[in-house]
Image (cartoon, rainbow, N blue to C red; front, top):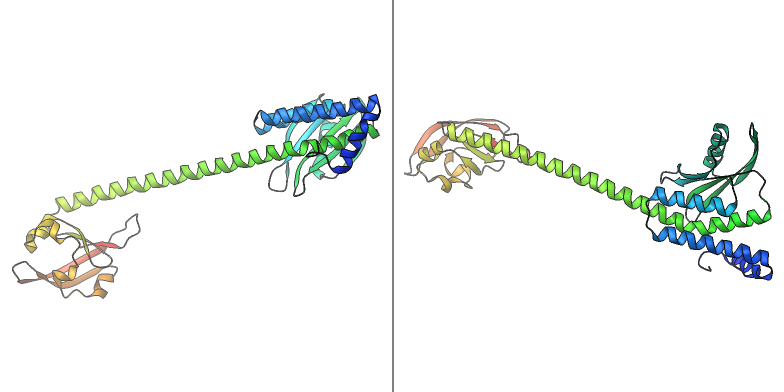
Length: 295
């Protein structure tokens, strides 16, 4: 009990043993603590746990109606659970408005069914507002009920912290799962596009009878077709990775960096001869974002 009650309420609770009535009050309080502990131990989801709390407080505080609004993490409150008799629309709206104001207060209201007392009780720990408790009673709270309300509020704080922590963890997990799904979709789309680009490029190189090649932004040969290999008199794979300047004379670095090339060059074939030619190359739009061009 010392872990839940502040010192002044603990001293008050210890004095309850002086009379049978006070012993009964202490037994009720300890019973509430035990029941809240059982709810926390069952690891219910946030909505079920909040409903269990309102059920327990309804009986403990002898109220007609008990509502709980939880902090939503964005500075607001959201309805979480309620227990007790069905309220009229006017009473329900007045109580919710009073709870959203977040200040401790009590209001008397008369409607067609009689006179009611609406009680708003904010539940805070040392750092933040956790929830707001709303009560509807036929009679104004007496000193004993006020004392019970204060004790109940202290007893519920660990339970409410538990509920909110689980909610926030579930929200964070849901956000991570959504982000993971988006990343997976993006990667799959990129893979599909890469495969389509590769298939298109392979078909272009295989079917084109003119010499073709693909080079990166630094002028290194990445891919080529068989016609280029035959023209240069080299084995196919031996060309890949070579700088274009090794077999294209007159091609300087500025020309390689140009967005589109139309340039006279000298083809250096394997036998040592040179053949005058014109190089025409266009940039390739690759999903990976690397600089490349087709010549």
